[in-house]
Length: 250
Ligand SMILES: Nc1ncnc2c1ncn2[C@@H]1O[C@H](COP(=O)(O)OP(=O)(O)OP(=O)(O)O)[C@@H](O)[C@H]1O
Ligand SMILES: [Mg+2]
Image 1 (spheres, rainbow, N blue to C red):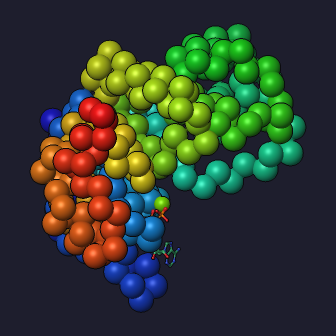
Image 2 (cartoon, rainbow, N blue to C red; image 1 turned 180 degrees about the vertical axis):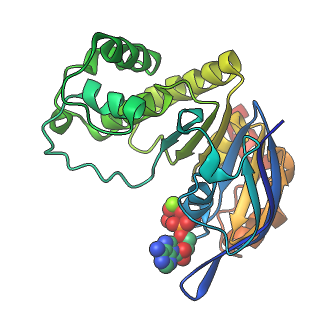
């Protein structure tokens, strides 16, 4: 079964075509990185898959259903912009539990605490369970959001620049745990990132997006010089995929 099946998707936001004639299939169990310049439509694409935005044209199926008919527990989402007010008087466990119930819970049940702790442990943040949200660093909060996305053991994980603010060591752990979760649960991961090296190193396939789908395939294919130039323009950084590999070897 396809985790995501998109056929000739277009979406207008106001006057501009944020997504133009996109067709792609993502297999269950794949880790796909989504690359593209600022304003390319990457977050918009995730929102279409979540059923938060309705396509202007074309068809979209997620886990073999129209997005709005997908069981909420099948999808975990880490949004790019966090709407949370850091002053909100809650602890990390309570934020994770909102991933289980889709709303804030006044009194936590033991089963909620246990599920939240399991998710926090998975992301290496069990020690933060009782910490007020306002006291967490940016990277720590990002981990709590990932725990929240994983709390219901989703089949499809949509991550919008999830590693922002996570330190270098933490980032290695972060991708290791994502891979572990994906393989253990046969889950599919779709991750927006601006980090070309991460995309080339961790993703099974890469989507290069700039309103249109410019490239989609294995990293070496989708991140070719021509695709990156088409997406980012002639002033893109010179490091193509081959250079990235060279640099890693050095
Ligand atoms: N609600 C909206 N109304 C009108 N235009 C919008 C709206 N939301 C986004 N856009 C525009 O749609 C385009 C795609 O936005 P989107 O947030 O998907 O880009 P992105 O690829 O995620 O960029 P970034 O890398 O900066 O996060 C942008 O030009 C943005 O200004
Ligand atoms: Mg975005």
